[in-house]
Length: 182
Image 1 (tube, rainbow, N blue to C red):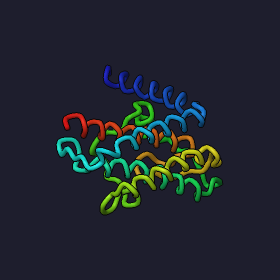
Image 2: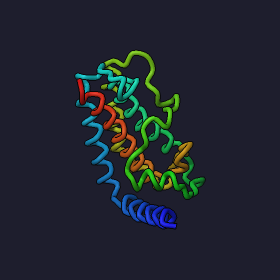
Image 3: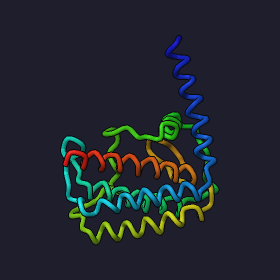
């Protein structure tokens, strides 16, 4: 019984946190995302670092994956038909948004956002520049532009921005851990 009450309280807290997160204005969320992208870019000098205890991928892989996510999700939103948007309930998304974290090692990146081949400084710079420009465009999209995540369900523009900040922080933590003992 105590477990059940605890789960219900966590769920209610998650919903309250989610509603406050979604009510943050787009400008603040975009500002946070830009700051995160700038931190990602600051790791360019150590991009080739690998720490197999933390990740099989290099710092450059995580950097490029972050940029690809921002750019690909913008495209998905941009080309979505807002008249088809239907808000859905998703307890996993509620948990992720309430906890502001993604679990490590549970999901494999889709092909479209998986860095390919040698990740050069030029590639990282190009994807970073595109991601920064994309962050500026996100709030100009209609609110009901959306994309469907295989686990977290359908997210509109504002939920996508929240997801991007959580996803970016997830990979920033991995990068920081890769570098911690190097």
